Length: 379
Image 1 (tube, helix red, strand yellow):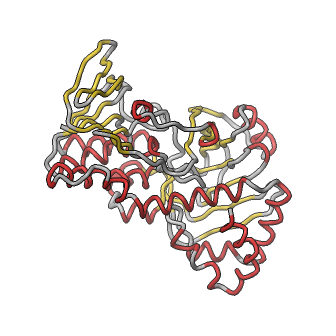
Image 2 (tube, helix red, strand yellow):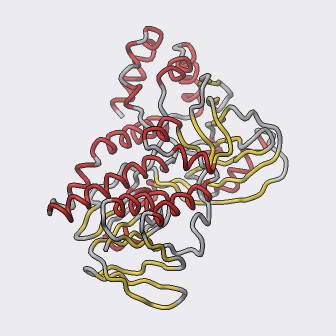
Image 3 (tube, helix red, strand yellow):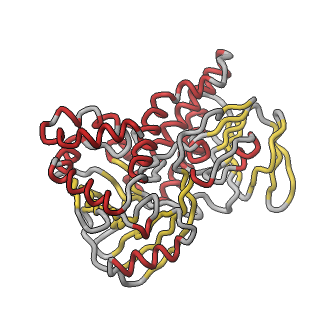
């Protein structure tokens, strides 16, 4: 038996793959329903959906198709990235989680709702189920229990305040261009950014993340400055991990995956698709351990390619956070002169920056960014 803590996309993806390989799996979910609460913008790349063969799951939960992004500096310099085809999907995140959970159950996984992990001792998992203490006997434990992971705490892995941003988001009614995501940099979003992700022409997910310590005040400043009005509903607030992917994510018979392991993009805070990719790597590593007695720690080695992408996201975040508003405006002017928008429209990838970073200096228009590239690689 493999016990998975958390019924989000990473947990259910790991459970489904383990079941398909013949290993009994139980998923523990502390809430009464999968997909509640929703603490995510629900924007995922079209390329990642295709690579992970998730088109069917997306079609069931699709709300909008995105073709590009408009990215604004503090003083309204804009870099525009656009394509003729769909580059990203806006999904109903709660429904998406439930569709993935259904797939895991259909594969044979057990799902226990209202069941919270309390402790792990060897092959015994202590849980609280509807207010009562119970135990689950298990061979292995997978911590897919999110940013505030109890499993991570049990393993003794320490994180720092600087490794997180606090996000706040609402669903707003108004008038929006459904083809474009908008991203805004400014002091109201310290060390991160604000966003408008349209669900339709009339509704959008509007939010920001910040390290200021007062994210609701930051949000009020942002919507006032951008003249965003209308009815706000479905308010949510959460932490987002933006540190490097964690090391030591295997200890004895316990492993971490997804947000619990900081397998999230520090550039954007997104982690749905890369978390699912990591979950499949984890399941394959467990299968090799149970079938061939391969070391569980091979999971960390098997994540090396994924972690290289995540560290590049983290490096980009560190580089951006070093700049004040004037420096950010200057950078955007340089980017526009270098035709960065055209470059990203042709080569950009939301999930895998290594696919375009290496091409930057192959375009003559981008050579003017060479001094910035030097600064970036020294970061």
